[in-house]
Length: 305
Length: 276
Image (cartoon, each protein chain N blue to C red):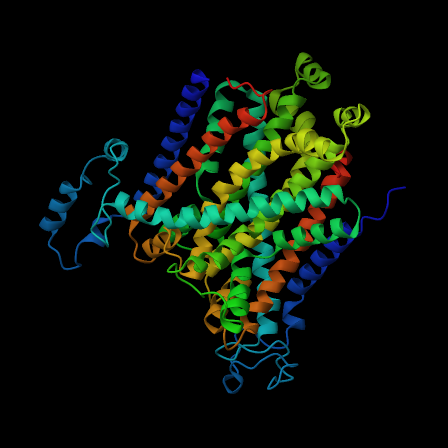
């Protein structure tokens, strides 16, 4: 177990190193950040001084090494616009994004598992067709478009839910439903097919043949095994939700990482943008580590090396 | 005999309609997509009270015909979606092929690249790239290909790992067939089936993401009519003029539905075991 953790941590660090290198190169390819920092009428001497102060006069590899050295100490630089530490700004907004992503994740898990099970158990009936139609539409509808439609219906016409913001608990409902749609559809499709496969397996027939009936077979034997592919997928989905939340936040004025990033693009605030991407990637890598660990808990056959 | 794959037929039909609309746009669109009809601004669809018969799906805030813009917008969605899926295919299949065949160091580096790509929250990465290097058709296609290449690379790598041990590959190597020829003649063709399936889902993914990027304002030049940009323009008129945002969204949904249905059918047809 411990060697597994060390190996996985090492590989996670390598991945983050790649992410940081890529973001560093893109951020540097956009030209001289000094021109964005000083007024256009600044003297050349002032520019040179600031460049030296920020370490931008060093060769690129040295700059990257310094960036890394600072990053592991939790210093991702300062925002051009807010004049605050990037890490503080990002962590501040991360909570709101997590809240939205987790709410959507909960909806996707409950609905996805429920619909997937139902479709598998009622295979080739009207119920199954209806659920399949629902999941196909769920995958095809652009989530941000669904968000707009939900706003028209529930916030503007019926006026039962808030249009945007995050002031009340009810405000999370519309963005979370919008965000969960694709994940719900994917999880339901996955569970349906893995459940059907399990129900046709020999050990289920054996369980039934030796006299175990109905619910016990279903939950103890079938469901548990059908769940295994779902766990891997669910981990990926959570990462995907954090990424997709960016678009949904823009529609519902949700004060998360995505809105921060979009403002950062508009204001050409590259350190902030870079920090947001790095922190989000770190979250994704952590989630996948947890998923691997969870895997061993539900499937004893998996031995981690 | 197999039953008729109705869903696959429906998918092909939806795609055929979308392609036909995109190709014949100049002839079937009732107006130019950029033509302003300032006396008929925010006109509702023809069947709603106050609708005008010459603007079947209504007009937007500057009086442009929504139907014409939906028709012209199909061109961007289809070309960007296809180009991104193909570029991703070229990149991903090549890397997957090399990783699976050579294993060892090559595999380690390519697998690392795959994991790095997967760790990026894609939407943020896209905003980051397009925000720093700027939008435009080519930039959007490249960024979307970055989102799809891993799909191909992972599946091709897995396939090649199995295929490279088959007798006919070992035989080819034993008689001295050059490596490049072995890869292209004996291994690549056997990975074609999963590549085709991944291509269809990647196209759907690219069409949706391209629309999302336009919607966020970092995509293709908003003066070119595209479904994503129309949604972005329409969001400010949700209360007064729902039709501006609703129809392009419907167009995206139907196109993506078509591509997904075709992909599902292709997967079942090429690999009957996976049909459930």
